Length: 136
Image (cartoon, rainbow, N blue to C red; front, side, top):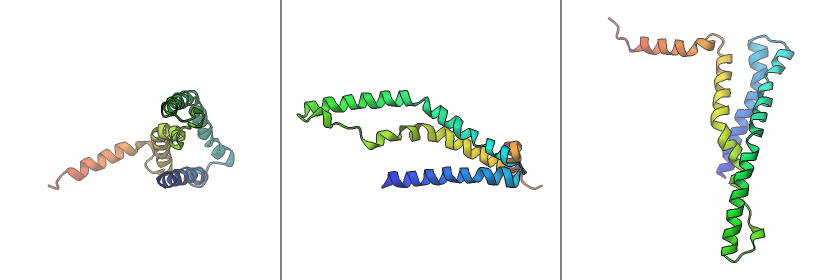
């Protein structure tokens, strides 16, 4: 049940990004359709980076399956019935979510807030320091 809820949240975030590209770049920044389409290159780059993880995750799955088969043999069960648990399929999400979702949310935030843009951290630091000063 929790995995379904987790995947629901992930899909909501990802599909919001897909719809958000058109809104942010075409409507707010006024780019044409060709330039807006270039924003989807980030998805291709992310897929290529995720593809590099396939051999590593395959190695881990193969190692875990061998351990399960040995355990099945020791328990007197047929080793051919051993299967990795479904949670092992979530390695891509577990490894990639921290970096990719955080970076993409930050990029979308910077691009969406046209008044702040890249200067946002400096503006935020200035506002915090001014709010701490006592009026004299």
